[in-house]
Image 1: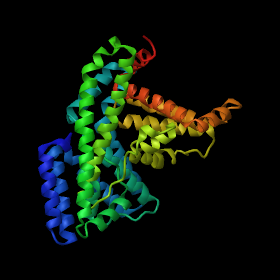
Image 2: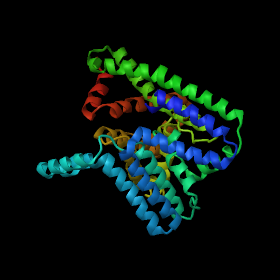
Image 3: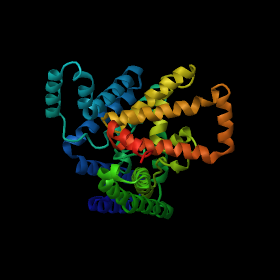
Image 4: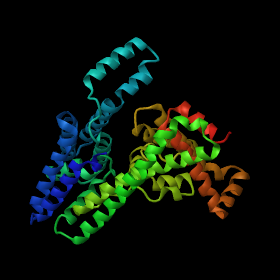
Length: 397
């Protein structure tokens, strides 16, 4: 985790102190842009920087051009680059291997020789932000005309690695306002948020990770109560890890006077699948809603089309987390859950009765939602067959 390295701690202290010691807004922003480049070069190296620099230039020029064809071409370039770096081997395995294992092996060998060992740093996040920017400019939004401000939007170092996914009007408005003058409240709020994030990540999540990693091979030999305790540890591990990381990113941005969007809002208090996704990884959920689900037709073309659109959106949410079938299965699992959640009330007789009962007893809805979500984490962390076997053992001695 980048935020727990000593290099990052020293880097953040030096950047924040120098940023506010500069007396005018212009030098502050130029210095911040330089700091973002140093951060990215240190953790990504030249090979990791090359894709984001190339996509950043293409996206900036397409936005300045503003025409539909330019924005579409730049979006295709961004998405194609993401697919190549992150999903090329997965696509070869899924699409080519069933037709011809020999050709798939040749393609895989060639692809491995071209690809770096790891995808470029933060490629999923900056690709989604570039697509958002181009989509909004294409439909009439004001483009970013300053190369410096576009660079800051593209590689703002607190959010580069793991989000939250920014929207450019909100980000630039906050940057312009917050960088004008120093306020002690920036530092106080930022440090409090960072401390909260480190407590979640280092104290809770890392210890739960050790417990889960150590005990995962022995899951089948556990008693029933131990298996459910393991599932609870797995569920809180991902919440504390991911929300802790988001807290550190949001707090670091606050030290610089910048507000990033919230990413988590007590998701394990949700009483329905729909509410869970309004509270979990909110910047990703809202992005997929605005740029995948709604353009596909949303809920405007009947129940069947709404369910189909939901499946597509959630399959992409799952695949976004990694090139593996268990992530796709996890996304489809939630897509099915959301489809049931949004349509069960229309079932004759039983649907209205069930909806009335859940409204009267909200704790039942909460328990059903958490059971569904927690079981889904097995798919998120384990291969599909292993997740299925573990799920069965939760309900059998």
